[in-house]
Image (cartoon, rainbow over all chains, first blue to last red; front, side):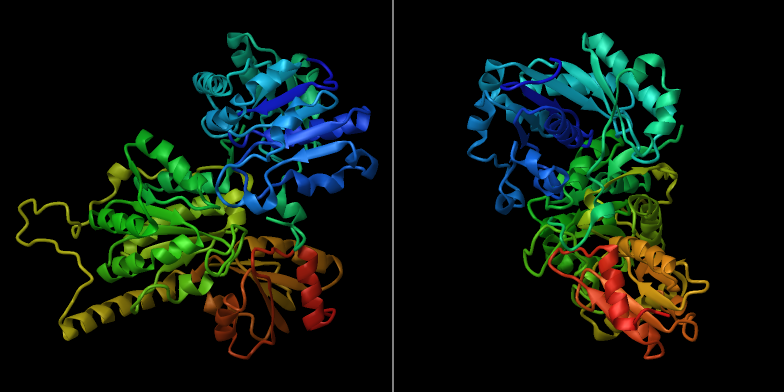
Length: 240
Length: 355
């Protein structure tokens, strides 16, 4: 898709815990910083009891905040253990004057939730990226990665645009692991006819990792800030 | 390359239990530990185990009771209100002297409360809960890795003493993600089949009968005395603690689980300011590491108990230190988790600048 513009929808899917929310948040913040386009960030992941996008608002400069519209379950409904979407979701996904970034739920069941908005999404330009961390359990073989992708494709009923290699062990990540993750995701992409659109690294280890990556992997690197480290920021102000 | 994977606490603890030989899991979903049964439902069939989603927590714990009587490694998990519902079964299992593991991802209470992290089930876990004179061994990991490692000990201790072992975490450990390594894999086929298990007579001259019902008073008192002797042995040999920056400490924070982890940051901040603060972190909260705490009588000028509850852990600290060390307390409830600076502020308010 290239740089998303007004009316475009970017969907992030992937297995549970692969980093979809982090990447959605980074993408939204980066669009706000580098362009003048208004951004809608929709959290459709209903299985995430301790993390809310709204808590990340202080990270957005005040001026940019006016251009950001966050859509997520109401706080009073967040913990009722009933998957709910806000009533404004359909209208928000139809908007033609904003970039819409959608963080969909984990695996096939989570991604199935967006299938109901399929027509709205496919009315405009859209891209569906599958985020993969090969150091999550059950993601360590080619066969398992293929199964995962097949489940997500079937659940979303949308074409997958590309893959995001997000292999990491948080601060303990090594260059070998990022490279091996890239290669595993590349092999998956090659067998499925899908490009890798990004190799994600965190600033915590970017400097020591990037110089050791192969040139193909290095040219795809995006350095993303990871926000969901609850123990780093915890305090009585934190709402769960 | 390491053998580590990135896991959510509730999943990692489930895998840790499976590596420790758990092959049977019965449970009922409740936030914030739903990833545990979800993970078990997928993984147990792969390793030849069985997963059943019961119709309630009461049913779950009684299924655990049944499997425990058959001498297999079995567990359940839940969160606070669900654990309350299981208390009758836990008492029956304890009264029957069969082993099992129960995990509680504690959330805000009382009642339904909320799904935020808490430690308010401490007294229920270490002192009471169900009826009768019984004890559980209660393990309180502070990280996902420690939880995974402790699950091996949890099943070993349960088998060794034929007791219920509880693993208590708060919702934060269940929900956070960390790299984790599975260092031990127990070969379940190599585990000795207990001779008391009710799995058929197999030519034995007696039938194995497991029950917590003993109508004869003398028989029941004798059984109670056996249990008490066992608990005394556990209390004398199985308590564990982590002592952090205690060698030259003039003050100590006493905290367990996630709260201890946050308090470690407080200790580092305090030391940077010249306050000689250390941390005493019970790893077993029953048996409570009383002797390990008493070692510091005479060395420390004060101990601040920090917990996500109202003076529950504090009771045990008070009993251990028996008025020999000035005590302070700081706790939050309802799912509010204080940060390291807030703990330090509470310390300075109660003990001055600690210099």
